Image (cartoon, rainbow, N blue to C red):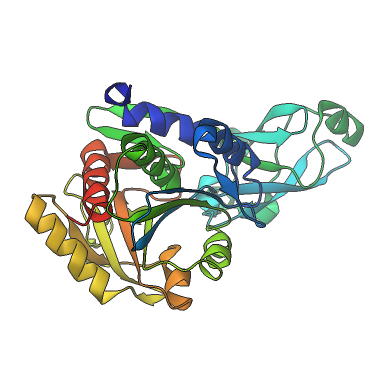
Length: 341
């Protein structure tokens, strides 16, 4: 029953699914199976979508399936695996990590090792190795042994994930944007079978982290009256960061990300959503930040588009952190938007 659904459990399921940008098949297949009673569609580039309702206005709500990670590029003679990052990966979080490589035979674990202090010079300790200097140790002693283990070139991987609940906070890698995926799924379970005032298409897009490519493909060929991208937004609430660079706080409501490096979103939708939030007592924040979301390409295709984002600390790191209240308030806000309240 819907009342027994727990958004945290749903988020955990989505977070743990593999889905490096360009390799989204596991999460896509999961969605197609979980939503099969609603006859989900898949387009030519791999986006998944479901439509509910028959109203005159057609609303699209999007979240991206993909996550940052890496892809293997080469196996050395001594069995070490070379790789290249996929998406906005910070070199500082690479070394000293356990990684998962997704092979046709299953997960192969490896480590990106760090020269220990016992063997490091003072110059070594000042360096910040880049991905070009690093390799993954999968416990193989030769090229042949690595191949026998099941690892070869062009296989996706990511950093091994933990999912930690700290009171009302969630800490894990991949809140960006599995939280959006979970919110869309939760909304469908709430709304299916109900009479909706508007026609709503829920879209899980591919390759957002590598150029907003899935959203560009689907918004270029489908006509929507309003498009909302449910994503995350970096919070400047952390030591050593000037808050004004990304002035949203976790726990104080979803953020209307009105302006980012791709420009401004729809002023009309911004004002509409602020009015809905105000009329229903839903806390929201309006802010400017860097980066971008799927809303940008929808806007480029001549559609009214607006990102509604979950504030997150430590974006694109293994310890992304968000507040459960922000997730629940986003769900409430989207329900009101869908029903024109």
